[in-house]
Each structure stands twice: as structure tokens, then as C-alpha cells.
Image (cartoon, rainbow, N blue to C red):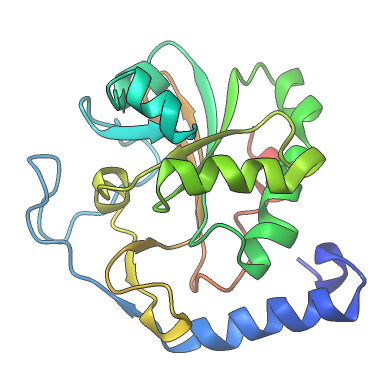
Length: 212
């Protein structure tokens, strides 16, 4: 993905470059047990079945969360019987995520729908209320995308993507690497994972679309 993809403004390019530099020294956590779906040395790949029971929170207001008892969305409800495009971002409002990664999917919503994709999902470990605000701040750049919080890291640990991004003031052990998936009825059909969370070379919407 060329730098021109994220926008032509000098400020935008500086923000993205700063994020890439900050993430150049990140540490990957070893996921220990984290649940029965994790095995030492195991990483999901094409053909992996996403286990049932992994919980995430749909982006919404605090009041909406209180009203529904903070009910989570389980992985089987998200994936079973559906074709789903899912991409994960290290942090709401951050340079590459805000200026490039999300827009790369929103601009391709119609193209994904033409491939019979049922939904496009953005996952982050930010809480659901932050993600709700971020979706609003993105405006048209978030059109056609559903936002989900993996605040308990269940999906992130399953994906073997937990990172220490404290170097970028994003907390210790609470973030996900950047990746994208195409999931058909709970089975991973395409997986694009970046080498560094500051990169956007393989997990953008255009790249994933080519696999469908």
C-alpha cells in the first residue's frame, strides 16, 4: 500500500509515519492458556474453524450497554451461516487505523457485497463505548462497517495476535496486531496478517477483496 493511499495531507503522512516508527519495537506476547481453544505454538490459518463461545461486545453507548445487560456477541452468532469480512486494528483514532485501514474497507463495501459478503466487521480491543464514538468520528469512512470490541482479548488470543504496544502509549498486553480475515460459515478462508501493527501492506480491503 503506497503512502498516497492514506491521504495526501502532510499531517496525515506524519501521523502514519509516527505510528510506524513507534510500532517498530513492539513485543509479541506468548498466549498461555487463555481458554480451551488455545494450544501452545498454535496459530490459526486458512481452514481453521473459529471456535464457538468467543465473546465480543458490539460498539454502542453506555446507556445501550446498561439496557441490554452488557450482553456479549458470541462468535457463533457472528459467523455461523454467514460470509464475514473481519479486520482488526490496534487502536481507535490512531493514524494508520483511522486514516487508512478502515477507509480501505468502507470504500469496498459494494464490491464485498457483490461477492455475497453478509457483513464487514472491524475489531479492536478498545472498549465498545470508545469504538462507538470512533465510528461516529469516522463518519462516511465507517459506512457499511460494524464495530466490535474484543475488550477481554478472547478473539485476539485465539488469533495469536496479542501485542505489547506500551511504546506507543497504548497500554501493556491489551492490543491486537493488524490483520484481516474472510470467514465463510465459521471457517477461515483467507488470512492476511501484518508483520508489524504499523504496517498496512496485506490486510487492507483491496488486498483481501482479491482473495474472494
